[in-house]
Image 1: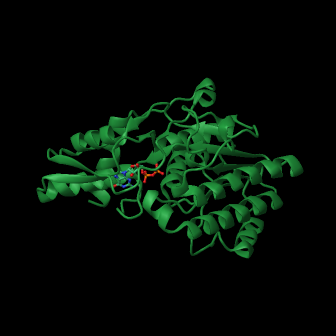
Image 2: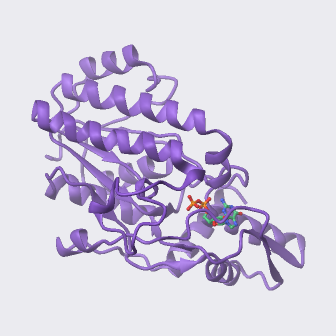
Image 3: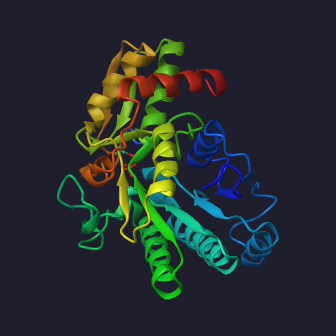
Length: 309
Ligand code: GDP
């Protein structure tokens, strides 16, 4: 990418897209192209085609998606599969047709089998059944990977696919019904502290293991891979370490300054038992995250207090 290349960031108001915009701006890229949902509805094929033909971006970060935590995914699976299939089909096809030089598709670690060996290598894709709580979302993302690779094979289109682990950071969704665990815990512990409540309820047993990546680190990796990676094979993006939900809750409580009790509501689902990515392919290219989990949570908490709390 040249500093003046036209770069379209689909989903620039979301957690990932906004971080990619910040990263590109900081690196001196001056020709960033963005459209809000009301300007271009990415589920509308004709609107997407007209946008690409008029704007002709050279590079595309496909960070637009319908995303949500375990409750949202299990409550609205139809919305998750339909919207994600539509968005990615429209954007990938129009990017190809309008002559985009390279497209980066953002997937998710939930595409891997529920009981994949840990840490999860890229080659474990499609080797076993998925976690039922987010199957619809995962199938849509798998379709996006196969579509990207198929356009490469049939049309020579340069598309790459990144699989980020669980993300968090500035701009996250803090709505308790639809958020992921980390923003939910920040909100719950903060509100309990402010209201002087003695306990916070954490869903599930606390035993599941998850890996967390600060979104600014993901954005850094996304730009790094746009510049340095041209393979068909999907590539994992993570930190290479995981933590139990119970320990995560204790860490968030410490950062927030909540001193009461943590109660586990085992009537809520645990989801997949462990989800740790094998990041050796990315690390072998020389990339490393900058945030450790504590400093990342401190950063996210600062943003929460200033913007939501
Ligand atoms: P997942 O990684 O796809 O399972 O999605 P989540 O980030 O929503 O959930 C991760 C784990 O955290 C699951 O075991 C949840 O049950 C657990 N968890 C604990 N408390 C919460 C909470 O308040 N909100 C959410 N979303 N998950 C929670």
